[in-house]
Amino acid sequence: MNFILQKSSLLETIGFDPTGGNGGPSSGRIHTDWHSGRNTAAGEPEEPLQGLLCSVSGSSTAGGSQMRGFFLVFSVVWVALGAAIVLYTQQMRSFLKGLVFAMNLRLWAIVPTVVGLLFVAGAFMVTEVFWLALIIGVIALTKGAYLALARPAQINSLLVWWFDSAEETATRLWGLVAFTIGVVLFARLF
Image (cartoon, rainbow, N blue to C red; front, side, top):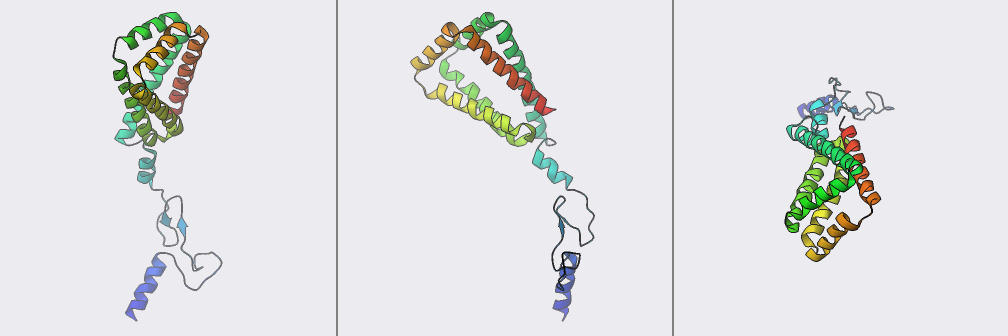
């Protein structure tokens, strides 16, 4: 008999009434407030689980705020670089050509790979920019893989074409794309 009373009080504690009904407090069902995850029939307070919600969004964690700062800096760099490419196309082409060809092309594969990994990881920490960061991260990882695995002659001919033979409008278009991505990333952070 003692076991039955304990079982009955346990069921009442979680909001279950075995007598049935039409969905009210004594309907034979467990009532849970799905926003807070609390059992409303048991008389628990109905406050949301703020800690859980903040940790899921990632914006209040230390890693989330660091990634938010990384995205912020990166968006400002993209806006500046994109604007400079659009406004000063020839000067930026020669500057970037000197920068790229000054270093071993295989070492350049490290930069987009690291940036891609940071963007993919950051996408899960800062959910406001999840899809944008995930897509940019995957594209950057693909670029890093291409620079690491393609034949050096193929990479060199592509870069020579881009810096010397590509139309000025194509270069400006990519500058505009970089500028737009920077602005969108910046705007999604606020």
